[in-house]
Each structure stands twice: as structure tokens, then as C-alpha cells.
Length: 179
Image 1: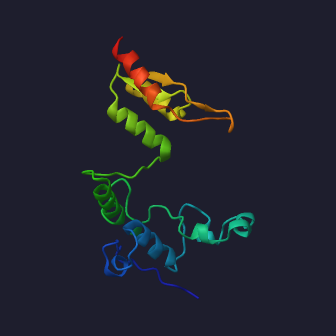
Image 2: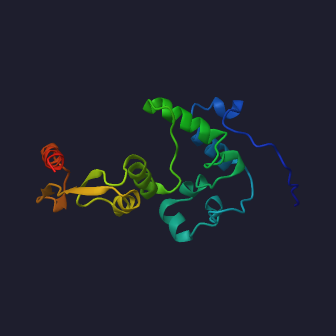
Image 3: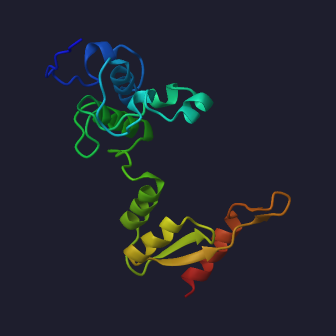
């Protein structure tokens, strides 16, 4: 059995067969790519489940691996989107009521750092719970923001830290503005 390899044009989510699926643009593109009968020589190396660890496929099956795909040409480019990612970001922006939306490329840490570094200037105060994520602290160091910590309410019955109360925020705002 020999198969010929052809350079077929990349199809994005605005193609008719994907557009009529009723699914979000990026989900449609992932679904279409996962359904292709194609050899995979890219990361992740579990080959759409066929090379996933047996211990995992016995536990959760092969399905979670089928759609775990990297940036393939037909899935668009996260750094310069022109297809389904761009379409999904545009739809998300409309849904959020914003002029533009970008998807994260570095997980929650990247998002927290981007949020703080894009809104805080050196010397400005940032109110945070004392148990905030480490990425918030690193973003303050990088942005030059000054932390104003609030100790979160503690839930004794659950033995965990709870949320910050509105009264705590008001108190720290009053304290910060009187400095």
C-alpha cells in the first residue's frame, strides 16, 4: 500500500462544509481536522490517540486525544490568525461587547500577567487577596505596581480561604486614598 502525498489547499472555517455545521469556528476546524484520515508527524506525539499510553486510553478512552491537535495549517495560526481562530476571536469580541479579543497562548499565568501589566503602571496600587496566584506577584514586579493585600475570609468549616468581602475592599480603598 502506497499513498500519495498531495499539497491540497488549506481550508478554513469559512468553507461551506464547516460553516454549516452550527459549531463554533475553532471547534468546527478541530472536528474537521480530527476526522481526516491523515498520518500525524507533529506534536503531541500520541498520534490522535493511537500512540497514547495504554494506561490512559484504558482509563479514559481514545476520544480525548482525537481533538488534541497543535497549530496545523488548517487550524490557523494563533500568533497571526487568518482563519478559524480569527473568526472565533471576532465572535468572542462581539459576545463580550469588546472591540477585539485575543486568545491566550500561555495559559492562565500568561493571562494574569497580561491583565496586570497592561493596566498597572509603576507605583500604582493593586488590591489583591493575600493568597493570589504567584503570576500576579511576578506581574507586579514586572509592571512596578505596588500590592495592597487583603487577607481573604477563612472558611473554618471547609478549612480553606474564602473570598474577599466588599467591606475589605472599601476599607483598603479608604486607607490607600488617605496615604
